[in-house]
Length: 361
Ligand SMILES: *Cc1c(COP(=O)(O)O)cnc(C)c1O
Image 1 (cartoon, rainbow, N blue to C red):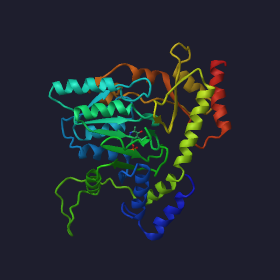
Image 2: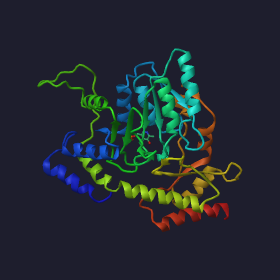
Image 3: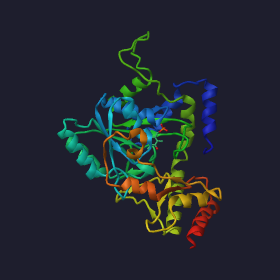
Image 4: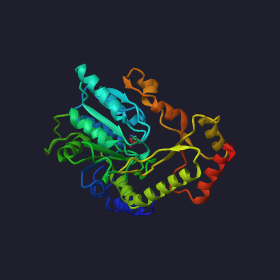
């Protein structure tokens, strides 16, 4: 926590707004809107819920095709399945590790030929790194297919000075406990289109009609953020800038000290929050990722493999995928290094020393 969260939480208790309604929710949305280029914002109880609503708002229904990245967390994809729609996976490109624009266009063309024009494209900005947005948005415009930005990991990252999450038709944030800022659990839906956010608000609160009694014309969801959690979020927003600065400092330190590894690189015009610092081992090295992970763990330093691609997940084995081998290679050669903003210089030195030990450098 940053320090101010408890003040907001006490305020929620003092005013007795212990519900998924209350003034702190509006204040949190207002502040999120400000850092989202004044887009409309709807605070929700998870990023997954935000993706689910985004798909509903774009009219995704049973048996519709939705394009999504393979190299991501499963929460990007699960809501497609909640709707009975069909995920089609796209592999990554090597620079940003995000969706490969060429494969995206191949997939769209092939699906249009089969009379299955995709209803939506979900992209993700993995580890906070902006995807190749110019290329992807061009393709989205060319074929008139809306983009949902899964920006669960990239709050504060920008592309051509625009905050991620605001470049597609809809964007989402996550405030889960592991993200750059947290509300313990939470998320948000973001759009420049007011209709989407108004409609999303109604769907997220059980789709109640504006009547004195309970009237329902459609199926709703219980997806609104709690006023207490919004209070935590307000405190966390105060330290967002500071955290991005620290995350980038951690990343630069690893890059400087560990030139034996390959790291993610920002494209021209893109700025990453470096939510997690990640690396790839050289393919020619005799020490594989798992040995490196265990070596660090023996000194109580936790690292984790990169996302296991969705097209390699047993649960999605029957889904169509457009593959170039990049995400599988990333999975085989990569680790997330300790990236917590509470690390001090001594902690960072300890990680680097332990890595240098196994490579005898
Ligand atoms: C965390 C995460 C989500 C899900 O967010 P929750 O708030 O945990 O539901 C979705 N996509 C990606 C890429 C994530 O990292």
